[in-house]
Length: 65
Image (cartoon, rainbow, N blue to C red; front, side, top):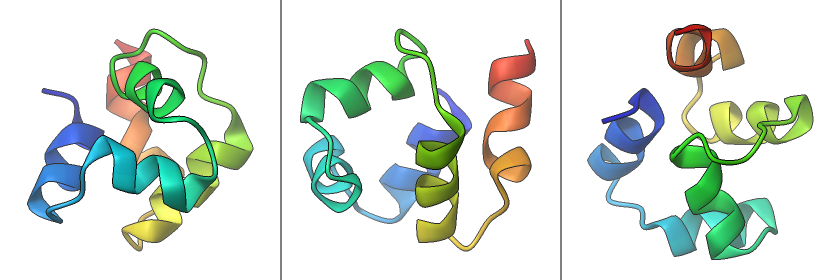
């Protein structure tokens, strides 16, 4: 499980909930979470700010491996 999915699940948010907040499609969000779509910096900032984290705290390990 990616750190993003773990944090999203703990916050009781669905992929659809995240997509709405980020103003992207549910599929787009799901692909980001599954590392099937490139994560752009602006989206990383939006996602991490939802959880009061820095982008590196949330994504560094997942995308560095």
